[in-house]
Amino acid sequence: MKQTTFDQFQRYVIANYTRYPVCLVRGEGSWVWDDEGNRYLDFFPGWGCDLLGHCPPRVVRAVQEQVAQLIHVPNTWYTEPQGRLAEALSQRTGWGGQCFFCNSGAEANEAAIKIARLYGKPGRYKILCMLNSFHGRTMGALSATGQPKYHQGLEPLLAGFHFAPYGDLDAAARLIDSETCAILVEPIQGEGGVNLPPAGYLQGLRELCDRHNLLLIFDEVQCGMGRTGRWFAHQHWDVQPDVMTLAKALAGGVAAGALIARPEAAEKLRPGTHAATFGGNPLACAAALATIETIEADGLLRRAEELGAHFQQRFEALRQRCPLIQEVRVKGGMIGIDLTGDGAPVVKACLERRLLINCTHTTVLRLLPALTLTDAECEEGCAILEEVLLRITG
Ligand SMILES: Cc1ncc(COP(=O)(O)O)c(C=O)c1O
Picture (cartoon, rainbow, N blue to C red):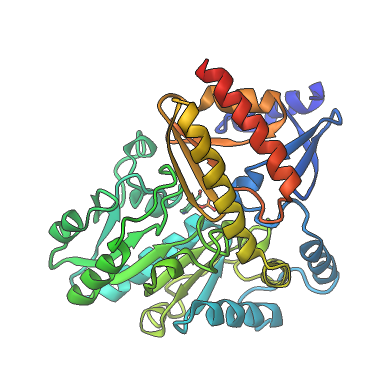
């Protein structure tokens, strides 16, 4: 990468991220280019935000048109794109959700925590969350995150969060008391290692919520918006939440977040309880509408299932001859390959071969490919990953 860029970062950018020494300048579909002209195949575009690949044409066009018309006005006014987006999302929930818009996943979860607290009045404020969850870095979302490593040095956290092992209904039931107002869970844990819910788990949580009058909040920031082959991951298991949060892929790579709630929960957010200056701005909403249009017009829900089946089959077959692979966990375009050891050397070796992947939770290779990935691109990337895994196994 250019020395000037590196120097600017050294001098002027806070070093809170570990960065690869590569400066990306352009993207198209599942490909990105660095400032030296090298091309990389991206199996983790935008950390799950670029569900349609880099610079998806409909999103680019929608943003270009909107940016020339109205970029931002505050929520003291009505705007057409926000109304249209809320309708489009609500219609896809199937449970009459109403929307609050913000700019990120953490912010959407902050809004969910506020709704839960307001719903619990008087007297209830505790939220049951899961171990290994990830809900974001703001102090509320962080307090809900069941991974102590992210809390270190930041205590005291927000009070009232309790944690059950993901997948364990009995433990969840034991942690509910007269002060509990909600259960917050990722239907599929992403950052925690691509963990799929055991049979009956999400329904069991729904039943617990119904029995104790709790809000069931699904964090679909990573697994929602078509990623797994349904609009929202919970639709695979035929269970409905009271509140759901979205971000990442919502606007095809443009920053956007949303909370969608049933009217009984949504009504808790009154003027003065919550707001986001940029939330629901015309630009982000136009991008999100173009994202929804693309998913539908290009049959990408079906493509997510196809890709998932392909990855599952391919890496399950590899597992038979590659002892480094412990388990393959896949739901549509959400793919986890759990290794018996550290995944970092695999990520590094793939980068050297110009394939971009991620490793989470130390041992889990995580792929969140664009649903526009072609069969040829899929083959090219899988072949590299396969080769690297076999070589590292030795
Ligand atoms: C499930 C989940 N919730 C919330 C977040 C936080 O989203 P953001 O980084 O947009 O605040 C993430 C980010 O990875 C996530 O995976």
